[in-house]
Image (cartoon, rainbow, N blue to C red; front, side):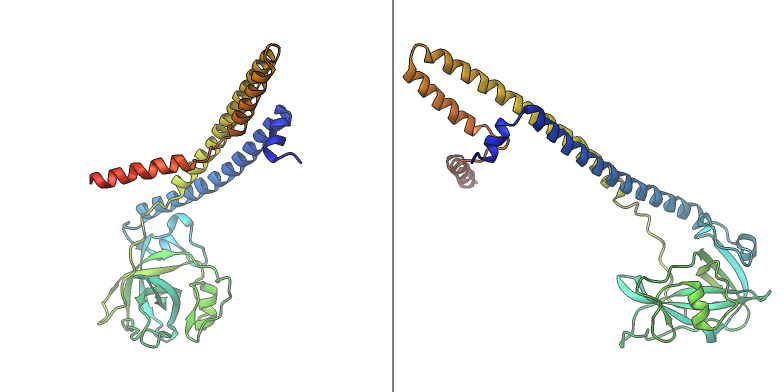
Length: 310
């Protein structure tokens, strides 16, 4: 039975090259899709960073001016600071669990806030690390009583986690505003957005830990997208190398065959010897030649010499 190498040599060149081209095209198409996916993620991240840069330190405006009651937050208004005056509904406080802060799964303290016009808006007052029991923080600072002016940054409602809305009593697995309204019993809670606290006036005696600034890391998406493009180019470069190798092998084999045929007319023994040499050379013509024991021995000797010189 012929070996794989022999079948490859005897197969028509057009069949092999068509297979090579087909494989390269399929690989390049896959790389193109993966590159587009990464570049799309980079575009989304760049848009997020532009929104943060434009909105994060903007001058606060009245909540009603930016987000009238009953409306949903526009993506371009995320992180915009707003001001509102009213009082906290402290009895409806609830905790958002598994929020990552300082490298740990912390709790964020959510308290509904009732404005003077009766509108109820959710304020994320900050976060606290898990306590000794892990099921609750060791402390949950109370909001200031009475009339309070709050400055906070707008955020969209979050999705319910894939594993469902279940959480211990007094907690939610995500800041999904309809779920918060259900859990707190605040059926009038505005579900168009919530806000993360910047400041309160008057300030409480003890406040939760402040929310960190959002990351300005653009992520690896651009470099990944470029890498996939380079991989596609490398596929065709490798294809060119394989075809060039195949053509060189065919040319050398034809030259060997012609030389053997010419010599056979005058010296059969010499022709047989030349044919054996040609066969030996053919067996050694591979795309990626393996290192021989002699090559590896020479490398070891060179490394030993370098080590001794140190």
